[in-house]
Image 1 (cartoon, rainbow, N blue to C red):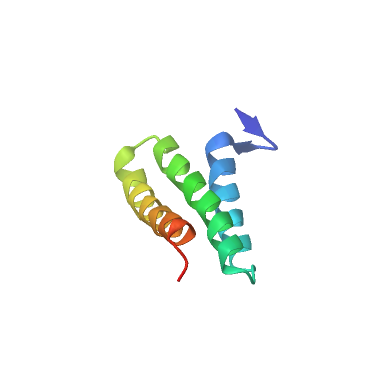
Image 2 (cartoon, rainbow, N blue to C red; image 1 turned 60 degrees about the horizontal axis):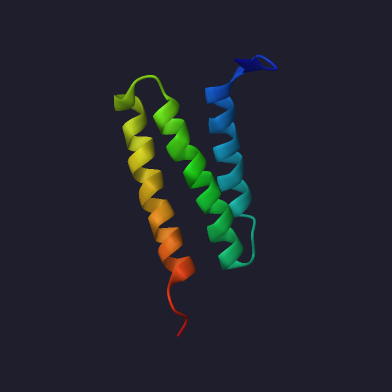
Length: 79
């Protein structure tokens, strides 16, 4: 399926990139982590959608780890 000549796989990758890019414009660290987490989730999805898992696996591993770090910092008790 294509929208505007761009495949669904490419759209997921572009949306993931956009979310990560937008997250770095945030002044509030909590907002940055939440938006970056959405980008990470989209990148994990993108990695799974890539036809060859060997190509997508580094994307999946890296972004899953970053997502875990974001979740840790968002849920840890405040001092």
